[in-house]
Amino acid sequence: MSRTARLGAFIVLTLGILCAGIFIIGSNEYRFKSTYKLKAEFDNVAGLAAGADVQVGGVHSGTVRSIELPHQPGGKVVVLMDVDKRTHEIVKQDSMATIETEGLLGSQYMAISFGSPGQPDVKDGDTLKSIPPLEMSAILKKASDILDSSQQAVVNTTQATAHLNSVTAKIDSGQGTVGALVNDRALYNNLDQTTASLQQTMTHAQAGVTDFQENMEAMKHNFLLRGYFKKRGYEDSAELESDEVEELPAGTPVKSFTIAAKELFDGKDSAKLKHQKSLKESGEFLASNPFGLAVVVAATGMEGDTQKDLVLTEARAAVVRSYLVDNFAFDDSQLKTLGKGKQPDAGAEGDWGTVQVVIYPAGTAIPPGKSTKAQASSAQ
Image 1 (cartoon, rainbow, N blue to C red):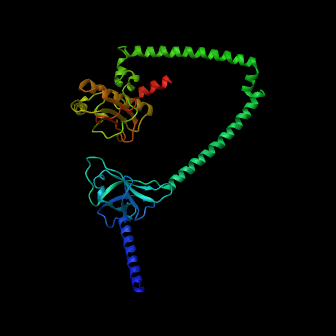
Image 2: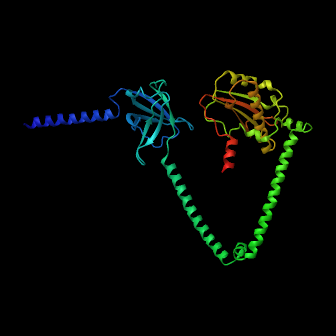
Image 3: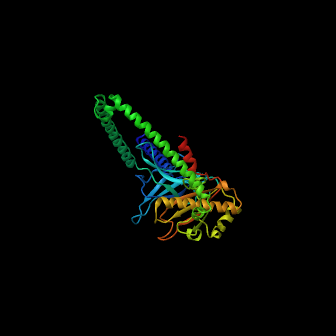
C-alpha cells in the first residue's frame, strides 16, 4: 500500500472514531433522542451540576440541562431537565423530583418518582413538586453530635459507678442512716413499726376519700344543690373523657363549622348550652352526609386558669356532642370530642373561645381516646 493510501486510511479511521465518540456522547446527553423539558425548584441543590443524570424509577432517562440561580434573595434555584419522551406515560403531575447521591460519597443525580394512575400527564416545560435534598454535611454533624453525647453518657456512667461504689463501702462500714439501719437490728424494728402505722393511716385516709366521693355523688342528686352542678353544664367530670380523643386525626377534613362560644353558652365560665340553634347547620350536615369521623373541638382564649380552662373546654365539647347526638340522626360512635384548653387562635382578649365541628371523610382512623389510655395505664 502506498504512503498516500495509508494516510487516507488513517484519516478515514480517525473520522470514524470521532463520529462514533460524538454519537455515544450525544446519545448519553440525549442530543439525538426525542425529549421533553421539565423543571424543579429547590432552596439548595446540594452540589448538583449541569450534565448530571436524570433517573426515572432508577433508570437513566435524561440529563440536567442547566441550573439557574434566583434573581433575588429568598428565591428558588431552578433545575432544567431534558427527559426521554418514553417516560411520558409514567411521569405524572403528582410525580416528585428529588436530588439523590450515588452511594455515600458519590455524585448527585436527579430522581423523578412515578406518578399515580389517573393523574394528568406532565406537559413540556411543567414544574414538578420537589423534596429538599439531604445534605451530607448536616448528616455528618448530626452523627458527630450523637457520638459526643454517647461519649458524655459513658463518662457519666463511669462517675455514677464510682459514686455507687463509695456509697456501698460506707454502708458496709455502718456509716450514715442506711448503714446504721443495715447494721442495727433495733433501728430496723422501729422503722418497721413506723411503716406499719403509716400504712394504717393511709388506709383510713383512703376510706375518708371514698366517703367524700359518695357524699359528693349524693349532693349531685340533692334538689337543693343540683342547680350548682347544672349551672356548669355537666355533673360528673369523669364523663368528659368517655368520648374524648387525644388529638385530631391525620388528613384533611371535608367540612368544618366554627361557632363562637359566646353564641352557644350562657356564661364565659359555663358549659351550659343557651343558643342551640347555632348548632343546627352542623347537625344537619352530619345527618344528611356520609362521613368517617367528626370531632367537636372546644378551646378558650389565653386568659384564666390553665387547668380550669382545660376542664371547661372538655365539658363544652361533651355538651355539644350530647346535643348533636340527641337531636340529629347519625352514628354517634363516629362523633368524638377534644378539649384543648387555652389556644392563641381561640379569640381575642375577652372572648369566650370557640367550638368547632370538624368532619373527616370515610376511612379516617380514630385516634386513641383519653379514657382508653387511662385504663391501660391503670392496668399496668
